[in-house]
Length: 252
Ligand code: PXP
Image 1 (cartoon, rainbow, N blue to C red):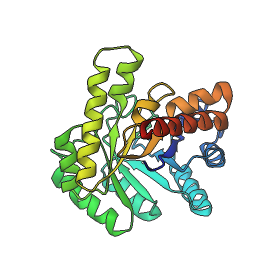
Image 2: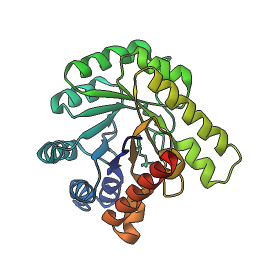
Image 3: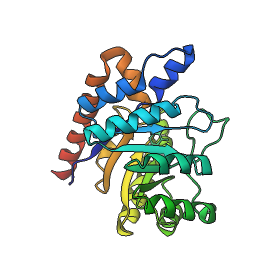
Image 4: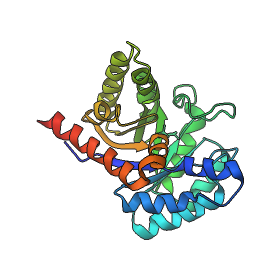
């Protein structure tokens, strides 16, 4: 099985910074530390309301990722403004996500089935600029096929429902993991690269990391929370170790 990459999402360092309107803690410093601790790349979501990451953060993250030769995964909604920002920076990857202002976090996947006509031309323009385009979708076969149809190279499967079910000890957790496995297998059969993310913690990372078609996990909120207690570097290293353990056990 291939080594699983870890993308660290540093949005919530900016959430803490913005809560006081100060210049600290700095998400760019967190990105530098994450890369030094073994993150394979940095993920940042520039929301339309700029509630955490700012335009200036994206400018700086693009610079440090380029300098270090590590990928920046730019998460954004499918809007003309975000497309223009992505085209200006040409990050390694753009992950297209749904966005509703009233939501606390990205609550579900992008509806690529219904959004085909709006999404396909944006994917084409980003891809033309050399950006790998990922669609953040629910683990649903129709959405996987729709992501392929709009020209995405990558799908990121939304793991939020599964992670929440595990944390709340709900019996649906097993079925949700089965859906993630099925969606990953379909995506791979269609030639898509398969990523996963949202809500992953130390407990849920192993069953997810054991899904063989996955090549990248994007993890943020739990790592930033854990960093309060043990530091960002150790939190990332522990997550990395659990990912590697899961892969080794699945391959044995
Ligand atoms: N991947 C995507 C596409 C996301 O929108 C998010 C949340 O911003 C994550 C991964 C990371 O989720 P979490 O912060 O819950 O680990």
